[in-house]
Image (cartoon, one colour):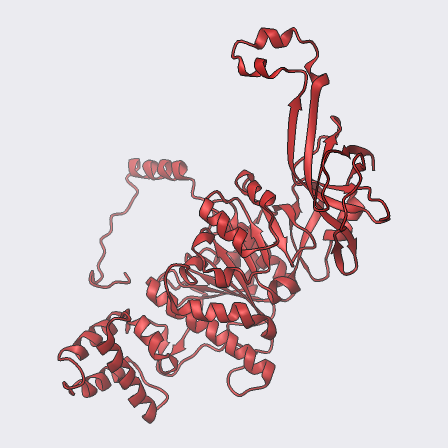
Length: 523
């Protein structure tokens, strides 16, 4: 490796500045090695800023808008150019990870571009890794995420809209399935169903809404009697301030459970009517109000008297299986119903893993599971309470012990609850501009430096900063482009307008009228 520069100025153990050779063509995100006294191994540093100045141009000429002629008379200006780079010292690579020296290198120490052999040694992990992309600064170096680490200690994929979030998730799913991984995807916008076109039977789609269920998808059922009072009240969209209504619901459920473990909405309404006759305890009209809430959702195919989709089943359709990604498409459901579905789903998976790990009675799931939650700011919000927030908190804090991993995906990290986000020990951060989102990212991860944070707005589409336990060192990566169909891709607006316009000119667009019930909230 040839020298590309020399350390100069005030040198710290954590950061260096160095003069860059003009011929080096150094880029932000590249790795360099530094000569250290007494350390035989190559000490690695990540370049995070580069500044070019020219000592031959007087400052007063720079400020003068009429200075072009004067600059021309100064002669060869390139001789005065000075390029200075700053780099974060990462340390030298050992079997136990990187060790950062506790002392700085000497001023004038030689700086070299890191060699491909060293970088491949660091990032190559074909056996248990997910090949997520390549170095932005070197297409020859592939970047692998440790699947063990991202499942055990959770992952966050964060980006503004259009930066490549869904593409990153698709690449990750494909890579994990190559290792026979088990994945459950909460899909609020029906983005991942198209993965089946590329990956085939490895993608199993569960659709709770029969109105949007397509051929080849499976229903997902939860037994109504298994819902907690809080979950049923949320399902009925009855707020916390409706104390009397909630009290009657609680008493009705308690009464039914003394008689049976299976009941449906009709039985619930009957019991509410019976108990609601006690006007000393409940206000007049309370049963009627509750029943109106029930009537709005009792046609949902999700909650049944005696059916429950198993977490794990060798023979039939189940949520969890090795080599399977289950897409839970909840796009046809109102937000408050989505909240209950996610809460039930996460609770079932977590409990099944606990039962299997501790050999307890009840439903068991014998294999670890990676749960990907899209639009997680809607289910683990920093600004409002939800049922799913509590179970996601529990999974984030305790899932490691039982083999339940979380992948939080959001375009608004500033809205994600910090107790959940901070548990993600690995972060894939694509382009992020919003200052609130940047602050939340910085506060949630000790692994990202202020210098890397400053690079977030300058990332191109598909480029990401990856930090945390899933990767040996912080890295700026170009994520692979997923070559299959993906629902999250941008729509070519003008092209669609033109197509529609042509069809109108040809009079080929059929006119249809909606013949359903306009009072139906799910049409």
